Image (cartoon, rainbow, N blue to C red):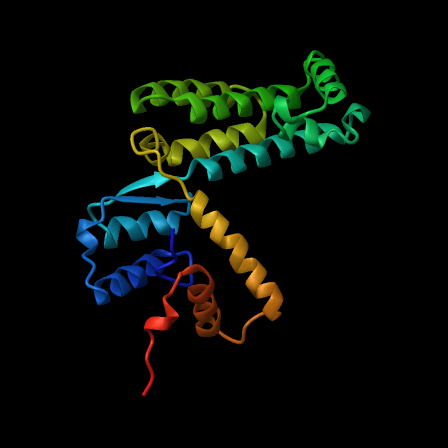
Length: 228
């Protein structure tokens, strides 16, 4: 759970810099077997080139975030012409157990009116069920394939775009069900890093920023540091 490497960028060169730093600390890039990351095409190419034996796992929380964004776009598009959608955004983007009783009833009534956003919300919930309940890669493969087909025939542009994104990263998404790793720990560290940046009111350069990240998230043993 410790930060051991800080490298700027989101392209293949970023992974290359990580691999070089890894070797500087006696790491062997070809021994890396699993990498959990988001759906960045730059990361995908970099992993393929510089961590050649690593299997890429797409973080399921990033998949869920893209699904939320797709439902939100569908709601905004339909909300421009339908007054029923005023102040209902939270109903579509939150799970039923986190809604109050009145909100659950309102959502049920809206869903029963065959609204496009209601269909988009059901697709999001199916995706969430797959990520939560999928037991094997083969089962997840079948269920995701069916979901993508449903979304592609939905006539909802945001959901069709989501389906295309899932298909582009299908192997990485399915890999999660065989190796259930995610970037949750990293997201927690990111919150700490944002707080450090806010307290410092920014840093002059990347070196200063990286130093503070190591100090706050690297769990360094400062007592072991000696000076002459």
